[in-house]
Image 1: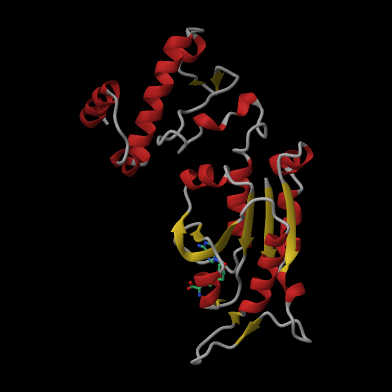
Image 2: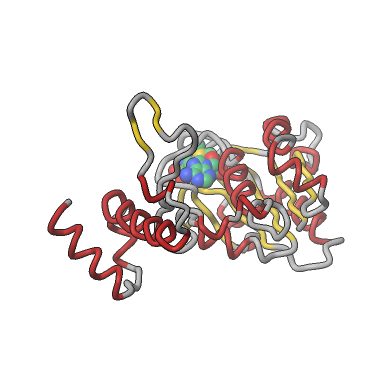
Length: 244
Ligand SMILES: C[S@@+](CC[C@H](N)C(=O)[O-])C[C@H]1O[C@@H](n2cnc3c(N)ncnc32)[C@H](O)[C@@H]1O
């Protein structure tokens, strides 16, 4: 996968892209990153990328020219039609489903905004979609792009080791993941559930499925509204409604 990030603050990315899974994914040639300062594309003498809003009002607005030119330049030599994503608190809310969808693409371009926002023509005529990472406002789109890039790249085949499979992660199946325990079996008198020490893989699997369902019921009942319950889960639901 090829990922291009357009930003006014490229240095923000060096830590995130140079560590952990994102670093390993590049070493394994599963992904390549380019972080580009779109100020370099500004066609005016002072390399201004923003200007006052027409009609007056607070804040500066990102001009269309540098961003259009940067995206067109990156698209020119692309083997696949890139998906151009605008980071924006007004966009559709980011989810694991969207991460899975983006992980199938060959080329992603992220545009990180700053200041008051973008000239509307960027939204209307340049981008494929606008994504928000939540109902709050950040100073710029960089942290949002990092969140999306991290969650997408870890889904690319061969990026995570087998022991770290993303399939069981929270939100992948529609439920939250079950609780985990590790050694020691007794920590300050706090014991690990006995079934996990039993060596009986079938019982352990059943316990995990039930605890994953219980956790979702208790913490995120909204997720169950869209979830198609199995017969077993319907029984658990009745049990939880009576006991929890
Ligand atoms: C200060 S914000 C601008 C907010 C804008 N005035 C508004 O009310 O919609 C500057 C930039 O930060 C980024 N940003 C802020 N909040 C975000 C969010 N929740 N998700 C994704 N990007 C965000 C966007 O790139 C945005 O253009």
